[in-house]
Length: 363
Image (cartoon, rainbow, N blue to C red; front, side, top):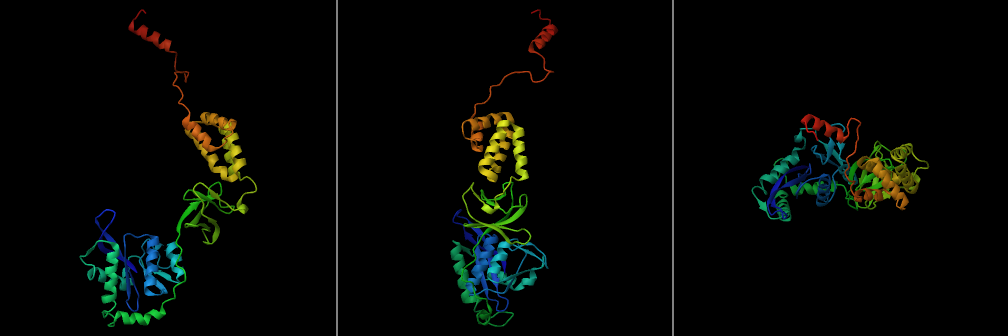
């Protein structure tokens, strides 16, 4: 399979014509092709196009040959390529193996290269369409009425007849389509959680400071072992700002990193230390982020101002990070005063007497 330039299609958002991308999937034996048009590509779009091709063919193939484009291959290597994890899992769902070409050697998939050029020069040349649906319908009609009924120049046989021979060899499609997910790498923070779309999910003990591969969809978040790729933890999605931690993963004693953080808070000011200790007693390791927030306020506004705000928070019964932040944001600005801040700065009267002496003013 391969990408090529598709026809110009009017974009409904801008009203202007825009170049599309042409995806071509060609069977090696019969030269039967599936040609699909999309606006743009991504890892998920690339995988979805394969699924659409399998459904149109009525079965899945055993292996696919592709270029080293980023949607399919993260790290090219003729012997051990690193395949995009989403693409790899989609192919595994259909029992397909990916065989990337050598770098800068596209002739290894010459059958599909010819298929791309065939569509560009024959049905799509010089045409423009008012919608992507209209362009796809036109391409499908051409595929059915002309491309499938032609006598192929290499095989000297009709494409549809050869595809009828090839179709029984295709794999049966699975009952359910693949459930797509997004993926990334996340660091395990001091509270033992990784962040996914502003929500926090607990990792097993011992992973603080490490980076873990993470997969997520609309329902679940999965944390994987970076070496074996095995599942470490799976959590249900939660709302922004919330945490999901298994009870078995909650620490039985305070980690050394958290103790060092509380010591920093006590060093910054007595009220800051008391406030952070209260946050830790109340929220446990989930309060580490709030403690870090209080210390960040101390760096921004100064320890003295934050210590006063922390004292007010404790006295008013609102010992939390949010109260301290709002208190500092809404406090009136301090009046400007002239005061001696360095022993080298002398009294103003001495400067006045010196000026009078130099100017000769008797007063």
